[in-house]
Amino acid sequence: MRQTHLFCNQHTIFGPGCLSQLKTLLLAAPLPTLVFINRSFAAGEYWPLLQSETGDLIAGVITVSHEASPQELDEWVQKWRNRAKRVLAIGGGSVLDAAKAFSTLCRHPLPAIRYLEKVGDTPLSGERLPLIAVPTTAGTGSEVTMNAVVTDQHHYRVKASLRHPALVPDIALLDPQLLNNTPATILASCAIDAFTHLFEAWLSSESSVFSRSFSLQGMQLFVAAWPALTQPDEQGECAREKMMMASWLGGLSLSMAGLGVIHGLAGETGALMPWHHGEVCGRLLLPFLGLCEQIKDPRQQRLLDELWQGLFPDRPPENTARQLADWLREMAPYDLWQSPPALPVAQCHEILSKAGSKNSLIKYSPQQMLFMLSESWPVEG
Image (tube, rainbow, N blue to C red; front, side):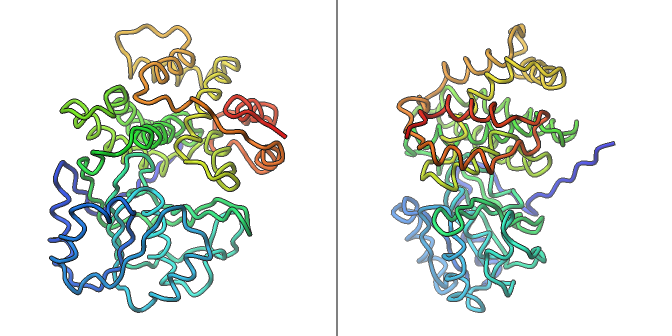
């Protein structure tokens, strides 16, 4: 029988306005704290207030605008090792992942690349600095995952993770008010990433009754939130609260059951192309559902039918893959699928040479993965 392992935050705080508790958390354990932050939060009203209230506890600030590279991580570690005693991350997935990676690399002697999946040769020990994560987007679920994504599009041409159960942050503080005033394209791109985590974990060969209960709850929250996600009213605020919870559940789900061919392709695409990860997943999701309609694997079809009944109990399942694809696009608060950029043919071939099905129920062929890529972006060159 399959066994499922759950690793989670020791302390999770959730709710509108809970960001105000951050000062109390920092002052309760007065440690020199290195802050990883994004530009939008740094330009907001709360950050100067937090700086003034915590005084000398903030040892330094690193502004993150993209997924960290191994070289950047090594530079940060060289500068801040033995100076920072705690890490605080406030931002989207790239910010949280950079902070998580830094927190453990400070306690490891080798360069970052040596510990990185796909190319490294040394396991992480699990040692790290204390870590607090405050997501300002609802998509990656990084505040509750055991991996930190690292990307190098130049030297190693790899997008991979540092991974260990100890990388789950000690404290996750989830305040949905941080999603207010976020551009519609970012809200939608991050949300479809959360859905893809939940959906692929649901269909995973490593899923179980236990993990699928988290996946289903997250997708139910997503369905309730998706149509109103970008509205600037009370209904939109309620939707964003649900989406932040869906994102957190997506992080739990992928940690338990893993992901599938969509992320198998998205990871290799992200190693080569400077595109938003959530949008990449969203573009790959629809042709994947097209493959589900064509293949009709009995195990996968059973899970799709069960999922549809869990999400839309008042609508009879007919062709659940197509129904789900139609619903996602028709109810989208922002059309993520308009005007796709071109994918150069050389990059397309490189993606296919490295991509895999991961934990999909079906092992997809290069031809099927090429179908997903060419349906997502025009392949040119």
